[in-house]
Image (cartoon, rainbow, N blue to C red; front, side, top):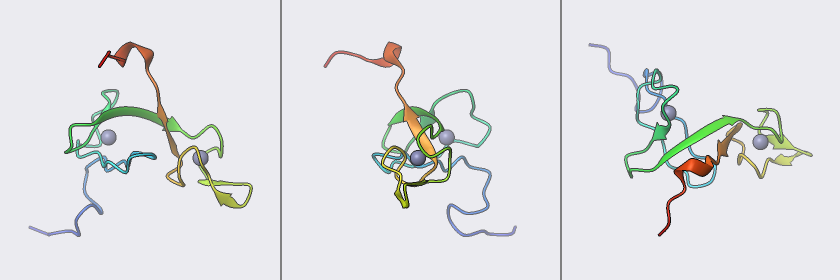
Length: 82
Ligand SMILES: [Zn+2]
Ligand SMILES: [Zn+2]
């Protein structure tokens, strides 16, 4: 079959965590389940509220999403001690 460049054009989510750089390897149909990286990191995110998805804030890289346009969301229920 037609081999495509890694991480491009595939039907994988590929979302990168704005803060840790972890990359989601789940199919892009995994919603609404959280993103999940090969390093076993899971997270939710949403369109960045600071830059509205442009990745740029005040002519600089948006600090909330690091230019990824998606801001990691904190879900309090997932917090676990230790
Ligand atoms: Zn994902
Ligand atoms: Zn942003």
